[in-house]
Image (tube, rainbow, N blue to C red; front, side, top):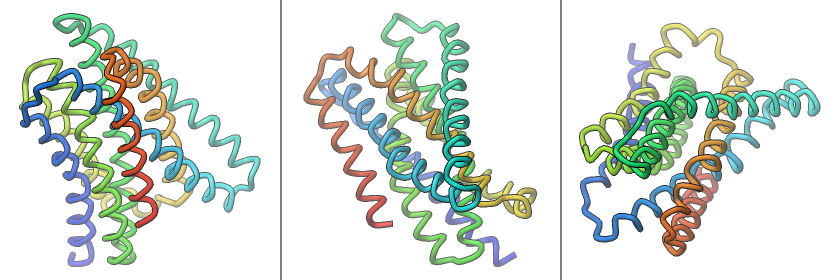
Length: 253
């Protein structure tokens, strides 16, 4: 039992760091539109940068080692495209939910899509964190810290649009909680059911799928919505800070 306590703790802390970012909705901003624009730009920058500089290259490297370059490339294209299709299907479903006014409807849709995307993202991360810590505690701690750092802006990407669409802080926190809980759930599933079947290839395929979802969400939904606020300075600052955060995270860990 002692062997699983620390991995579970690491996975739980990493997952629930999402709620740290979600707490930003408790701060009142004088320029509401400027903050929403910044939060959307920052979040989409994190999603794209994390996918392009971490999830995809790391996963492709693993698949290439095990399957060969061309097979890995073909598999990456197919799985990435499946991620794109998922966002399209989810968007159609969520479009049937009407908010109070067009702006609120768009924000609500982005918040819900972000929550679903990051739940899918956090689940395999929970598996990876647990398995890493289960085999080597120090490696698990390093991975957990890295995940924690990029989960914080993910909390912003969920709670901010949900709060400004519904006016409910508790709903913004709750949606972020749903994404956060996926990480320790992934860890528990890894221990109870998947431990014997999880391989580096499986996790790599899932993370490429997640990258397809995140990049599609960022480009198709979040970027156009951020641009509608016509706050170019906030937009640029958000994009740059998101990129810097991810690059620092990758370089350090």
